[in-house]
Image (cartoon, rainbow, N blue to C red; front, side, top):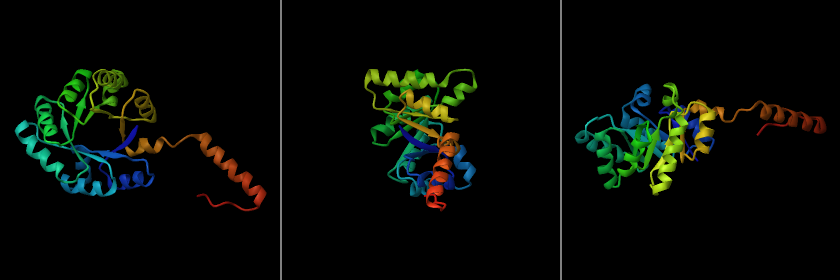
Length: 220
């Protein structure tokens, strides 16, 4: 399972990339707006930090405007994956852009039927939103399971990118459900490290070492 960071914040991306476990980045207009720079400029800076798939979303809502915007975004960097919304115009744009060799991440997916449409249109990624389904009383992870099963049935190459992951449990469940990728906020990635027994065990190891060698080892 690949780990993507769902952020446009450069400091968070540098910290995550420094661990050597971040495979890509997803952004959206909300995340870009928080950083206060024009989309193209911010995305270029992100591409300099993380060498992996970087999703950049169109803001146009009509097919005729999505196409030139998607093409422009794709030219920013070789790692750019253009994000299109799961609307009629978005699926039409996905089909056209995919045929042109531009990779597309179809976002805002909430049903298996929608995911089937995206795969038929040649999407590179499909982004089902787990947490937002949980918010309205559904079990979001069931959607991941349904999509992965359907894609296996028919050999679709579209990768399942589990989005709106809000906890370490979400990440683990998505991995168990067969998602190819999990995209998460930096704080969720950071939380995956944590367990009190890890901290307690390391503390004890260092104490035992110091007793024998009469020195306090320098943590690496």
